[in-house]
Length: 393
Ligand SMILES: *Cc1c(COP(=O)(O)O)cnc(C)c1O
Figure (cartoon, rainbow, N blue to C red):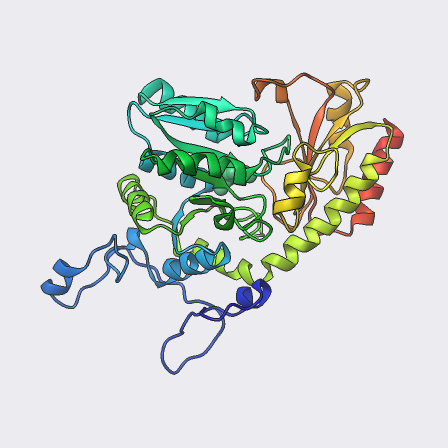
């Protein structure tokens, strides 16, 4: 869209043009592996990497091109590529930008499967992966080596919710890049859905999204996306996308498109509900610490306040140290409205335990950690659900 409207309006109105003589809001679902060319000259001249036309189902259809354009618009990016899951999108960035001999930096609180890919790259692909303190800020400059090519960031970090100083990290990388060594900074922006954090404005080169979460909003789709403002960068990533064969289904792309118009309203409702439940938990004697970026005792809260416009439905709590794992497991089992399961961004509230000691280099055990995803239920009912279990503890 040329003249920018508010995000909520943009989410409802897209530039999609339905077939001539037919008008409707939904985007058509185009199924195709083979894409037909009018003649051999058209086949020879079309370049899949330029995305100026359709070449093969793997490289996109009108359905996936529309979703990519809409996601790029939400993030204020220019280019977008879809992947079959959020994790596939992470792998696509790694394989596009890293080769044997290169170095990658990741925050110690990074999404755990991202950490696992980094370890795999180290063990089998000749890349070195090093983990940094997520609160390092400008200090990251001291970790950038001549062979460092990529810095992953995540805001906030998975499970422990520290909010990094993204502008300071990007500034350090940009200073190295200005000296001739290109260091790209990638952000896993899933938590903010691209709604509550404007990544490119803060210096990020590559945004990764797990569309599985808020974009789909239905707990029924796995999909990921990579978004950039840089054409050369997206073409490198597109090469990895093609080589890895990361196609997505047209039906799934449709489900994500269907979620977009309501995404911000849902995100805001998750956010309001989560703050209510988290504030109630904070006042309880059973809970030692609520890890929520909007609370002033969350590490990096001041970064959140400066750079973010919202928070979504996800936060963690640390139980008072007197509660054993057995007790907190029983706590989760006894909840009725909160279901037990991974992921988030869907309508139903979830609660899962994490053994943080096994996921972090530096984490002193302070009590059992549980992560809550606040869904779209009435927060009063969620609080009542937790309260009845607390009284039985
Ligand atoms: C869920 C998630 C992913 C991975 O997404 P999938 O689609 O489940 O592979 C990546 N990063 C973060 C922060 C996530 O929460």
